[in-house]
Amino acid sequence: QKEVEQNSGPLSVPEGAIASLNCTYSDRVSQSFFWYRQYSGKSPELIMSIYSNGDKEDGRFTAQLNKASQYVSLLIRDSQPSDSATYLCAGNSGGSNYKLTFGKGTLLTVNP
Amino acid sequence: DVKVTQSSRYLVKRTGEKVFLECVQDMDHENMFWYRQDPGLGLRLIYFSYDVKMKEKGDIPEGYSVSREKKERFSLILESASTNQTSMYLCASQWGQGEQYFGPGTRLTVT
Image (cartoon, rainbow over all chains, first blue to last red; front, side, top):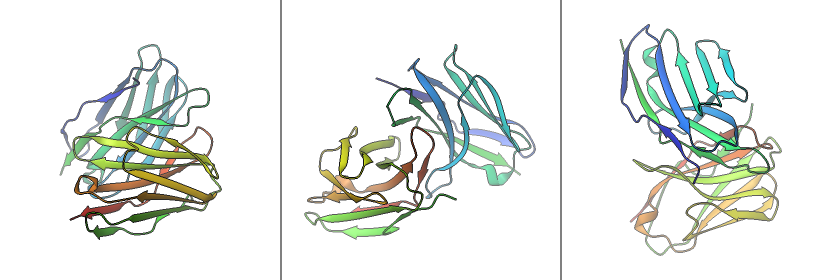
């Protein structure tokens, strides 16, 4: 069974620090990975997609993918209290599989 | 921007009632999904649809059915609601094998 594993946290960082969120996956065929942010009581919001090995940067967010190690991470620079949320990692498989497998999420708290 | 809407944000139903949850997307996406999310269990896929009138079971289809008569609309049906179906229900849409975009969710309480 395909699995996506995340540390459940909570992860607590001070304002202005770098928050590092990690995810491992079991399906070697997985091609695409996504990070979602979910505020309490709200639905998941897509923040990053990454499809190839290496880093992808978007503002304060950097996604990193290492397919050999089956590892994907999200770095949040200059963390703000508004970044406090649960972060979900998701991956799909190549071929005709549309489905995403989601991790259970890591709760991040940014302390002012 | 992709917009996915769901018919209700909050819903309270009684045990045994038939419940309809509707989802509409405006981006002409082929694929649509229904999930439920419960504390400690994460997101679990109930059903998905990759085309009009096409559907496939997800991981937890028991007690649910779906309908997709038009490309933009995907409905989740609880044939006879039970208390263990109290949950947050999330609809998502997707083009191809790319990102999934979620609606705001429906928090359903079955009493």
